[in-house]
Image 1 (cartoon, helix red, strand yellow):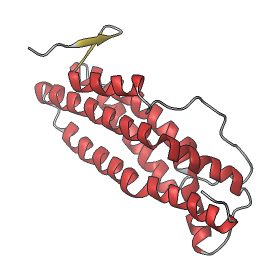
Image 2 (tube, helix red, strand yellow):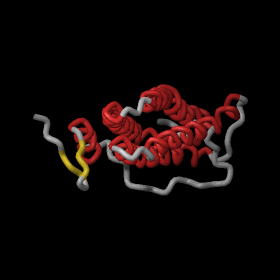
Image 3 (cartoon, rainbow, N blue to C red):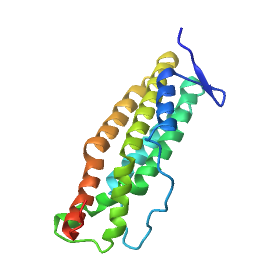
Length: 191
């Protein structure tokens, strides 16, 4: 028999419990909040990435409208996704707005501030990847509920969300880190 744990009266499955335990009791917790720089000329996140975040949040919001267990699970997942996207948009993705300029050998004026963003991403990579795993655990619960409640559109959403997470982990996050290393190299800053 699989024991189910409860948080705030809501049951969670063992996989979600394990991920929650990892987040709460390991080194992958987010570091204490230090204000990130907000400065004139802060790079803008590429519009295509912001549109994809908006699209995915819109899709999960539609699923929250189902008046059954699928909708209940989707609400928890939507909350986590919103939190996760806010983190990414705060520090992980803005440096990507520099790519066109850097490709043309144009250097930003606010290099120190940009390096703060890339260093924060470096320190939070495990945390962001664990959040991806937690979102995936919710997705598995959502699929089980959707199968029972007969909501086939959840499987297409899963494909889109998985593609997005893979793009972040395999391309976007490494590109942000590479921008930081490139700026350090250009400025003669040692690692």
